[in-house]
Length: 304
Ligand code: DON
Image: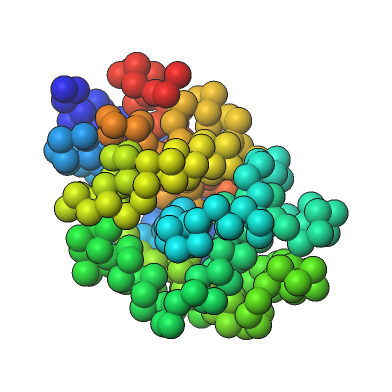
């Protein structure tokens, strides 16, 4: 077993010293005031041993990381039918781009770009009685942590300024790939993105994807072939037009969010989450990416 503690302590020390930490996202006003000097990292290994360093207990807005969780819930409800509504190819475009959506008749390239996650939210709304509370309960039960919650201020702030998401949703609706009305779908989408978690909570939730569909309490939420598909989508699409770079530098399936979080995993070995609010030009956490590159290079632990 690898002792991750000295490795992540050293990574945290180096991250805290970095001068260029990237830019905190400012297009959602409510998350623009986060301290750019925060840095946290947690690892949960296959024996459920937790290692943490820096600001790993502090909660932040998980934003797009939630797309993996809504995908996972929708996939477990509708199964392979999901892929009639959304593709599985990397887009090579930023997370909020619209042009492919028009050219490809309202079928988003994959479930991890905004347009794809909007379709996944539509599927959940059609299949759940109380989508907001049932989705939150799903996330809480995977993590065995009832304290995980939405941040209503962030959800409202994004709804007021999410013009591109409205544009995407109306375009999808025009191609008849949205069953519910745009307002209802975007309300649920913004709530799902507003969930707050710490690095320690994130690794507990994502343990299920590294542990063959069994969560920490050993409940089986996903079948192994479904976990394979979700991890493949994270590898090819989790970092938008930087997915190739992330595979090249880090070599793990993972997902980022504009709140500065990244979560990644090596199947059957470990799950890791980092938080550093400054983003690079592609909208992924700058120091988070370099921390994960150091981790997999120093330990030799990656899928390659
Ligand atoms: O829809 C949005 O723009 C945000 N709620 C989520 C975007 C995001 O996190 C992209 N990730 N790197």
